[in-house]
Image (cartoon, rainbow, N blue to C red; front, side):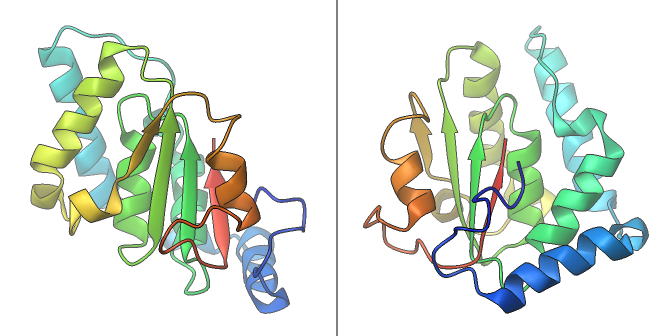
Length: 171
């Protein structure tokens, strides 16, 4: 869910919400250059195949979803992005490429080998694909996202440094 908060995000002001609405209503995502994300997704897929792993669904399978997520994450008012479900790291790479200055938090049970390999790949090769400062930008909470810290982060009560107003959450 992008823009998860049902209008109740602390600090997501009316200007930011208006920007989100404008992106969605005007289909501004149609003209985005998705080649950096496409190249990263291809490299992730190659890595997963090389490891002999199979995957679940991902943003790599849905071009429209990738475009909308990129357009929304790129808005200047988006300062924090929360992703529930890491899988192989396709959408993680998308968020990090789309908004290199946002604080991006990931939550996943990490019950599948693909998540471990996806994290390793992004940490080792993310910079080669245009992701800046991967280690700072990729804190991953491994466990149940329904318990603290995910709800606390979304509500603005986490106490995590860098959790700022203007949120987009994906799942």
